[in-house]
Length: 306
Image (cartoon, rainbow, N blue to C red; front, side, top):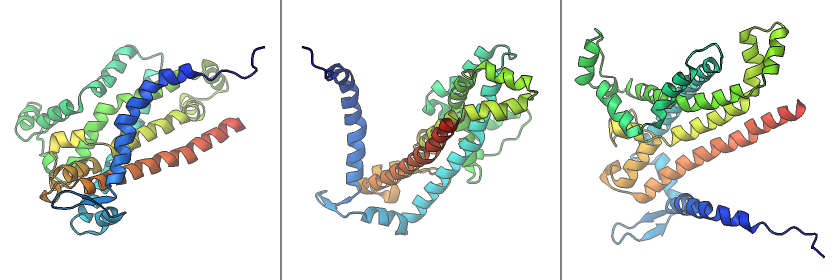
């Protein structure tokens, strides 16, 4: 007689094991070890680790040498995120809506051109835009069009917003493709039914399309949040490790780099760098959990009610 119990699916474990092992070694273990390191300090002689608990985190937000840098990096990171949320994602939704229309010719060409910058190296993009916006080459370039370009990357008031817009230009193709995939998956019957009832194109978008793509809006928001709170490459490439001018473009990623590798306070401090990384992790974790327990639950409740 055959047993009524199903055999354990060992083949699934075999297929998943390589990916799980690699992810654990290169993602999970470094993350846990970084959090562990943030609870220690190192002796000046010998480099022995001494457990200090949350003292490093307390020092980040209270010490006069650390508090201004951490606060400034936090404010700049939230500003960087706000630029992407207010400019990149609405622009991506607009582009996706236009490209989802059947009345736009050469849609495939436009999709490719808009998405193309996102596959290029961030370092390459940083060097190119640094050259374009430089006081020497950039001024000569824009002089051809009779435009006087101020030193946008050399002024504290304009450096971060300009780099935020450069980042928007590079990455707008990613949320555009996600929105486009969601829009073209909407059944044509729903749109035709709304038009038969006399709905305008604007009403169709707000009352039919937008509610149906709200799960994608939530995913794009989370991806934007995580990506911006991990941002580092563009700032480092264009403004250097010191986030010039006068730390006005400093993000949590550049602060972590300076702290860990010795630019902050002229001393490499791995434990304080790990504390900065811990702050980044806690902020990202809080944002993701907020999405899971509010946005996702609300979408699930609305789906059940429908």
